[in-house]
Length: 494
Image (cartoon, rainbow, N blue to C red; front, side, top):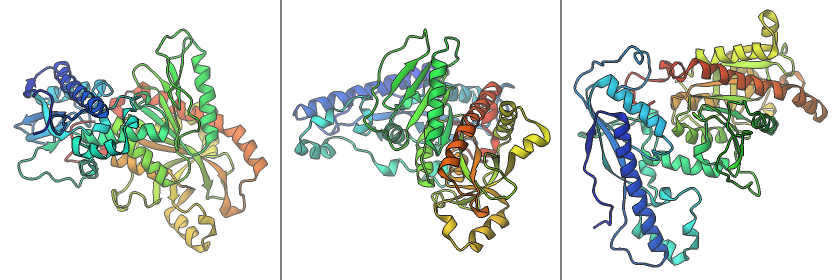
């Protein structure tokens, strides 16, 4: 007989805030039970049975295809179910997802006029996902005691964490509810756990607009700009967070102190320029290669950001391009291979008008160019992404033929992966690259030339990315979440 917290009977709500309060109560009760049991287990106590606590769930029943959407939400691409039936998802971290859950609940109530049912699911919370941010109590256990954990607690079950819903391959069995969200609670918790490891910062600091880069030079400039913002009492940003959760607050702004710089940087360090409504900017140095690009976007996707964009360097493929020119991707050649199983190559990755226009406008504003002069500096075209860093060493007729047939104007190793995962996870995406060499035309990076190039272009490129985010933020998130990213049988949650 499992040792569980007191049972909470399912309850129905017509108020989003009340429904969320019930979710919080069930979740906090579950965490308290798991943490108390773990402390007793570490102390050597024999517990009265297998310890278990389960995630809360939200469920809706609809009886008609029609919706009663008010005019303010009629154009949204989310917030409603695909048809009559029973829909359900498990929930986690209502403290972190408070604003997000509240909006999803409100939209379901407005669009369908049905009650929200909140209760305790059957999916267990793995003990690892119950620990607080700085809890490391398992480190004090003996090897023998750690070996007993599997017999006493639920551990992460990868079978409950796949991306079948997001990939469009999930098919519920007879009698099972349809999914309400792209990710189960366990899948979300798994990614939150991995984000700490890969980026060196807590998930709480991630903002709804994310910039990815493949060079540390961009991070150095972002850090400098972040500290500039913190010195300005009128800045709209309230904090700047660095790996180790090192917290720098805006001049005159008071917040809890915390964090310690790590002895070495994590694999993909993240930096966060924080706004109180989470519409600030997170920047991640993903390093080089599509594997890192897929890994980090797999995990950031559970935070449901409003947009992510790639700012990095690329090889220019046209002789007419100059070092320092920009490339705005409007199509991708996917030779990265890391997403072939999840997203078949025959699936097109469309350019998103909202992102494209924001980036183009940002380039014009930052460079003070327009018309033919702007077109000379920035070319719109196809970006090819490869998993072969030494593609230049292939027999030259092979890559050249593919580049010619695809009309590619630039090559890198990450952009197509980030765009494809954005498409897969319904996260708006875009790419603005800067030409740093032209290997097909004999121009390769030389140390002195590269240093001069970086000084000249990195600051401008980063400011363009940040300006694009300002433009997108001003237009509102509801316009960003494009219907182009959602299928005809889509989950209700954004």
